[in-house]
Amino acid sequence: MRFICIHYKIRRHLYRLSEQAGILTYDNPSIADLKDQNRRTKLAEKYSELYDNQWTVAFETIAKEDPDMSYDTIALYLYAVLVDGYRFCEDLRRKQILALEDILFDPTGGIKTSQRGQKEEISTIFAKHLSDVAKLSSNVSSVHVAKAFVMDKNTKDKYRKMTKLIQTYILECVQLCWLMHIQTPPLCLDLKTIKGQVVDKNSYMEYTKKGKKIAFVVWPALFLHEDGPVLRKGVAQCQ
Image (tube, rainbow, N blue to C red):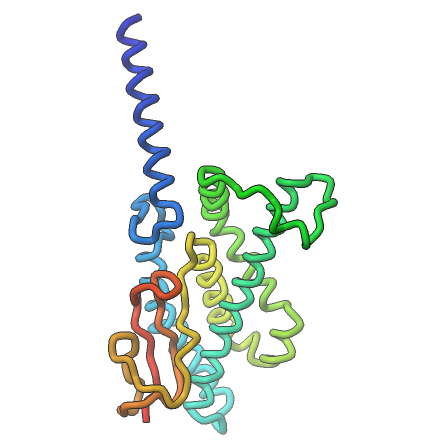
């Protein structure tokens, strides 16, 4: 009996330590959960592979389908797909969180937008569990999000015939962007670097031309979080 009690105490202590460790990793990108197959470093690897593999295939496919399209135009086109997918996921995740908060705080659905600022803040532990649930369902949810992006009217209007041609690239871009946005805090693509800025060699590699200034971004740099350190360098055409 004494052995059972000791065993129970040990298990309870280990559970508490596990809970505390989980709380420490929540909203703290510098601490990685090594059990998470979609942790930040893994997503950074996938981000590099997406550029090396699917981006290249999509580029070559468009070049073959439309020989009149310049290489720079194709690169800008593929950049736009990634950025639009990233923003689509960002907006969807924000709406998802707001909807969950409304359901939790007022199951009757009577809460108003103006009342959101007055709601009680979700506890750290509960918020962490909410994040964990999102990660557990991420492999399934990311597929649904990607399909929603492809079927979105704005996507169809903007990309038209190319949607089917480079569908694999589009789907993988959006799935990865969704996985980025369900991290706490989210990983961040550099959307601030624009034409004419001095090239930050710590954040960008040169594309096909060398120079001191940015002509256009081919592949955005990836940050650990907003205003955080660089996880993966981007690629930029220079001038």
